[in-house]
Length: 397
Ligand code: NI
Image (cartoon, rainbow, N blue to C red; front, side):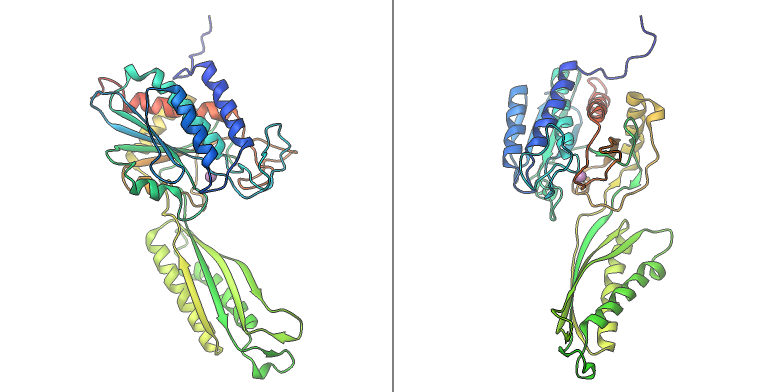
């Protein structure tokens, strides 16, 4: 007899086999944000085959499954995203994308499979549960305005007392889990700048207002904002990622187009930075006699983990995976619209380590050679199941 304590909760072997199968099916059939029709049909059909659930398609390609126990109790929501990216896969996996130019390069195939696995396990345990477990299969996480906001507007969070979500994370060793408290992901805002000067002959610059030279000053001065304008203990990124102007070597063009992103964790820093950007752009362009247009589009809110839910979920993860599995996790400046659900109920977003090298290196999310370690899928299922067993335990009220 083994003296090793069995991990809690134990998951049916066939569930784990199915989770891997679901993940591979989804991986082979990726669909872009807002176009996840077959993915949603697959999720819906799988949920129907599990049974004992109230199913709906509230918005876009989202699918919601409600496990209603009929006993009074809390409503625990669990979320997975399902969309893929416009990337040509280079993993050479046997279940690589069959949809040219589209790839599950962020692990959302795994998220969906994990949540389906949790559904299967929790339906089998419904007699031990009270209240409701609500499974949110979200479309369009990758593209602003995101699917989460739309789902929230359709009422999927009505009555929810807690919400949890997970992201498989290649930057974290498999077997480790990060349960950060406070700010977790950034507000990913986008901006466009047009600088209008006066075109002319490259050899007669005094008759022109050169939008390239002015644009270069704008780029340089915008870098000053984070370096000198933001508290060193706060976090902010201003990246100019596109600069387009001109057609040939001897013509100064009329205008230049710039584009980029701003990432912040704090609402005040976010608002102030956008205002200061415009002040710098206005100042530099006016000083040189050019005109500007500045469009600033706010992206998702930052994901901010609730202190109380995070503390409880940390204990659940420690119980499920062992305390040594808990990894310190700093905020990441990526965007994630799980934050929309957190507007309606306290919630926590967890990172499950899933690093798996391909061709000798662990490739980052959104890379053509990105892959996950499928052992992480089991960790994800266990965490969701254990959370429901803790928070929706029958007789816990
Ligand atoms: Ni993602």
